[in-house]
Length: 541
Image 1 (tube, one colour):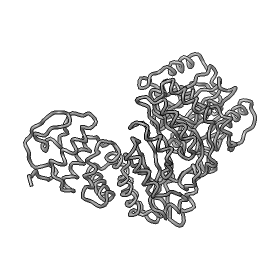
Image 2 (cartoon, rainbow, N blue to C red):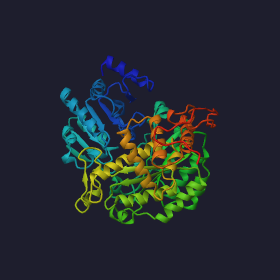
Image 3 (cartoon, rainbow, N blue to C red):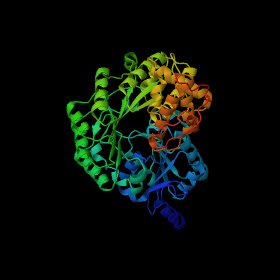
Image 4 (spheres, rainbow, N blue to C red):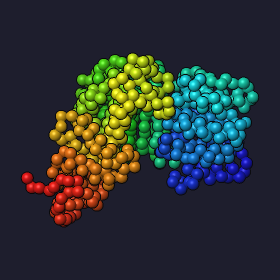
């Protein structure tokens, strides 16, 4: 590396988030950067877990390896410039469903500018269907599978001018052979980014839409070694821990030990995220969960469908009675924040059956309902249903379903809007009470919110970039125009929600209907009551 480039990269190491004009993160700085590990994260806040594993296991090549992270919103030419400053012989890219297109553009530019650089790819998006991917053709080598150890071996061969395979399958590593990467989270990561962890890999289930269905068997890291690494992170100031284990509550001994570890070290601000099996919460685990204060635990619970026939189609096994009982326990007896998932577009799922599942989930009352559109992830066996259910997917990332036998394109577009507007109104926390008024007099929250979704779509004409003030106006308009809720009741409910987060102002659309009322900010306002601009009139009946 030249002195000028070295000085420039050195300045990047100490950059302050938000102040760095280069908007990239340099984790490890070697005097000779023969190898660069890089990826384009979805957002700056996401720290690449996979690349840190690779760097932790580079062995004798560690001091010749740098790790640079970018995000998908940065311009490819700027990313190329940062990479070329390293003067590396090898660049390894982590490829994921969210960054394939941008990564391919970066690699194509590198090929034009410096064809001598060796390009290695890895990650889930290039671990399957390698023969059909243009990005694979641009690379010198693609490593499929878990490349924690294989990447260093391939780099060593390239540096020694040894021949390598165009595509090489990494042998499944023994977790006891891996050096854990948690020491590579630096203070910038601990302060400003999501910290990812895993106590195990793999999943015992065979849900056909999920890449974890091919990731068998389940393997656990040595527990004491893992907990020692967690203790080090805590000592360094880590507060938020996001576990990526697919089934955290599969092994009760391990999950109880981890919860006990964090409970014994609990402090205000500690936050733990786990993905759990929805129908598996035995008494020992319940006892521990009860002891955590509200807001300390978040459980991601993938239900995906309440339709038992659909569950059979996709080889998903779950006990819905136990699931409901576990939800009731978590909502009534703990402070756990529940993030529950449903998927639109599964084979055999109609709009009606999805709506019934949504209604059941509303009754179970999780704090968040994530509505996802089915994606055809490479390597998943969901494609076996293509002919019977006429599954048609987009050829471009993220490969979402476009239509199938039971949902045409228009219906799926409607559900894409539904999902987006649910995030803005149902999940945002800005309309906690107002959203209930959307389906207050309805037996089907799904159909009521679907009507609101179409109302909002017809007026906003877009799914993104809707300001909160505009959303307040739209929610108030729907409640008064479509649901015939008294304007003053609707206005006070929406205002209460709006000011829940500490806002003290009163949106213009609500002012004329809260005359003389006490607001959450302690202010009283007075304004003449007059006919609503949405067509509703103020009355006293």
